[in-house]
Image 1: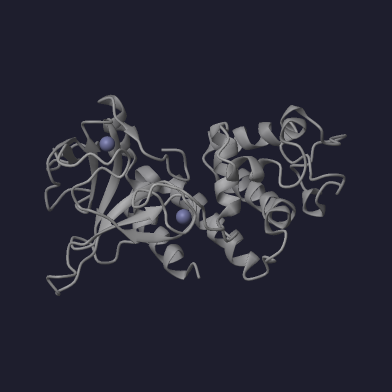
Image 2 (image 1 turned 135 degrees about the horizontal axis):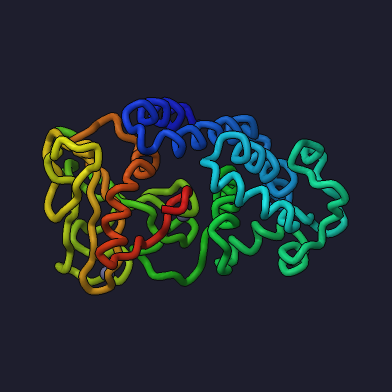
Length: 293
Ligand SMILES: [Zn+2]
Ligand SMILES: [Zn+2]
């Protein structure tokens, strides 16, 4: 199920030294997701993930994550992030190095979240979470099927779960009717859906789009990002940001015509230099990606 993710993350880790830590962590997460396999129960999946997946995500992050994220995760665990699930007791998988002595749960985070999946329920309900909590919830819920929403805005929201778009991509292909079709990829579940190529996926405004991409390499290590489409010899020839001047939102667009091997939701993680440029210019990503950019 994650074979393409694994292969692509391995290739991008070599290609993009600036993102080596991010892809190293992503590969560790893929291993965690694959180890869960198809064992997720259809009933009580969230509670199950809280007990069986979240601790593994925490361990993978502490071992392979960028130092700041790994430290933030340790602190969150120390603050009772894993405070379980109504009287279920701490998950057995926590008898590792992350289990703090005398931690009986009930820390400030645990008590605030109530019972059940705690953190995961809060994420599902769309509650405001700290970045590290959002990361842990997303990485854990990656293996949990989400149910269909009711009454959300059609088109700009995921038809499968109601989530916001993470990114868009253009399909490749020789068929002119199919080529260039724009797809949105959900930030909450793995679902993808077709969407207008000229409309803002956040506010619905049409025709106020600006494209930002890497200019031709200057010879320095740092990619230079500006308006327009990327040069063919750019570090990210297939990645660009599409912003909306009405709402100042943006997302990363992946052009499969320029790199047919791209796996959009994996490649998007490499676009950090573009994200930094967009933040510098006052744009806000519609949805931060798994790694928080
Ligand atoms: Zn979705
Ligand atoms: Zn907009």
